[in-house]
Amino acid sequence: MAVEWIGKHVYPIYEAHLRGRKTFEYVAEYEANQQLSSDELHALQLAKLKRLLAHCEAQVPFYQRHWAMADVSSRDLREVADLRHFPTIDKGMIRANQADMVASSWQGRTMRKSTGGSTGQPFSFEYTRESYERRMAVMMRGYGWAGWRQGERRLDIWGTEIAPTSALRRWKMQLHDRVLGRRVLSCFTMTQDNLPQYVRVIDDYRPKVIVGYTSALVELARWIERHQGARWAPHSVITAAEMLTQDQRTLLERAFRAPVFHTYGCREFMLIGAECEHHDGYHTSADHLVVELTDDAGVPVASGSGHVTITDLHNEGMPFVRYLNGDLGRTSDHTGACACGRALPLLGAVEGRSLDVLTSPDGRIIPGEFFPHLMKDQPAIEAFQVRQTSEDRLKVLLVGEGGHSEAIQQRLRTRIEKQTGPQLRVDFEWVDEIPLTPSGKRRVTVREIERPPVR
Image 1 (cartoon, rainbow, N blue to C red):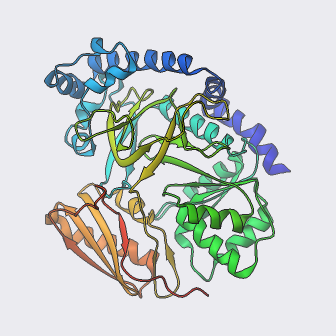
Image 2: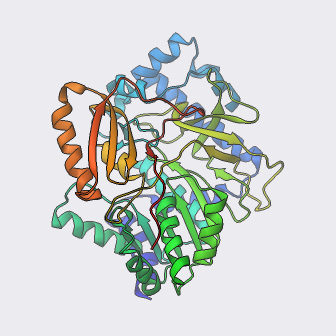
Image 3: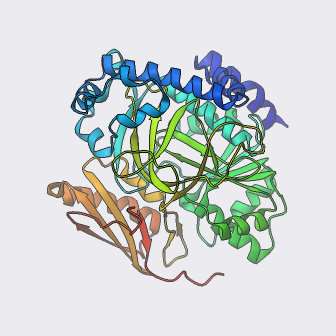
């Protein structure tokens, strides 16, 4: 049981004493918060929101201008509902005002991250160390609703770094995973032929929970059903990064012989919401974020669908206030308190965030999430979409600085062909815009052909 002992005892020491992080202090804080009543949560959220808006008004040039143009001030916020009077922001605004969005007291002290975007619009953003530690704590709390606790074996079937990494970097990542008490398998190397190896790892490692991209876990579940493996059944399966249909949930629960807990998040904030044991929607972290669903004018919707609009209560370095992350959500149909007893509000569903699985002629499986990972490090690309038009052909639509197209295309072609193999031809086309779906979303990957026959 060395893995469990290391994860339970060594990792907290590593975080607190070697890295100087407060992650587990925040875990305790958030665990306690989920016992608060609705009124207590509301008061906590309001206090954090008032502090954040005052900070933005005093130290963030972008918000000083943005709110002045809308004739609003931090003093106008007396209730959380008053947030509706503040204008929304989006990725385009962040790209255009990046330097002015960093608080004056945090200049040169933030961390930076890039995202390819679930809607095919890459950009980078900055955040503080406290924000990172709190995000990790919120994720641990959410995974706890699926029955996992730090120190218990966790197998992640996840995207890994695409760019070449040094031996030292790979060693550090492996050491970190070991200390964390988890094992990571890349879904970017998944093929029809090597699926048995993934099942073998599950049987040998015997994880308490399996965490993974929805599409990758679905491919694995299909293989398990066809070939009557795996022997090991985890306590639960946690799906992430892509939406989950009811048919997919049924397949996963049947193949893995375990309940499925879906989570919702994005790279800008990590976990936004997660299912509890009653599966009535996603409990959102009201003690960490303000999650709204808004119409095109930025007004919160009382019921039905709306734009997911997030305010991060703990990123003072580059604050996100009423940020449109590009997703469409639906209000919860569940009335009254959740049977689990948590007062954290429920989000009903997230719509239109579809990432098709692509395939290559030699049997490789390419999760749609591969392409946002690829594009996040390409600042010249403003939007993209990948279409599989035949078994051996991909068409990549790009919006951005076409003057650099040849260099960008060659760099992308090399990375894509390494992932897909030489039999899948890649064509590029620079366009002025990429059409949205009827639901108002931009699909990142589109599979225009039938799935190949299973083996």
